[in-house]
Length: 338
Image (cartoon, rainbow, N blue to C red):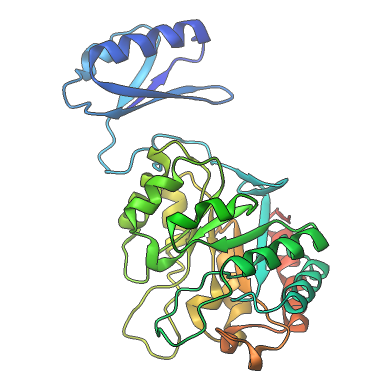
């Protein structure tokens, strides 16, 4: 349920209303203060609340019930866009973020070289996998803790915030210096992990599962937010369909749908969506034109020798060409990269 207060309601009166609402039922009340409007988001069993009685309060403008099962992630609950800040970079608003780097961290020389080159091209955050979820148990699984150490060295060398995936919630202490923790597609419905990530004060990049609906995606975000962590960035990375020409099928409609249903920032991963490096440019353009708040692109200094996902990775020179085009598109959309 959402309670919209009248414009002249003071903060003292708002607190009185919050106290009154809590007395009416076993609910939690979350105030959202906008420039002109204050909205109270009611979470819990609101079925017993009498809308007419709530509406009778002279300071209340309107009361709406939220039918969707996700409350905190719902735009009705939070009409203004949420902006998630990462070391001065903002996901949402008028900024676009470009996350770039290799699928896997392989050596110190590799990750630092790639980090320096993508930064020179205009990338704003560095991605790299230390723990890698692989379909085959015989494939390269990542360097683990050593990979995190190398990522932090690249961060120190370039000043770029780092994004990397967590595979096991027991590894969380190792991620203390990681700027953005990624939850991969395979773990989108690892609810125990999501609950634990909801208890920390760190941005979470949540990827959509390869066979999950938009509602299921938002419910996973709800798990994190219900624990108190509202720094969630949604990532569309393609879904599994009957099409075999691409690795996955980029659901470009998910971008405006998510922006309409939720207040959370949305980015797109064109590398995993297509699996083809030549498709990264048009899909990145489509993502930004559709309203995405950024893109996540795989870049490797030597794709043929990459230990994972080399076939879909761009060379730094190819990434540089794309960045110049994305900068022009961002300007056309009234936004800036970084």
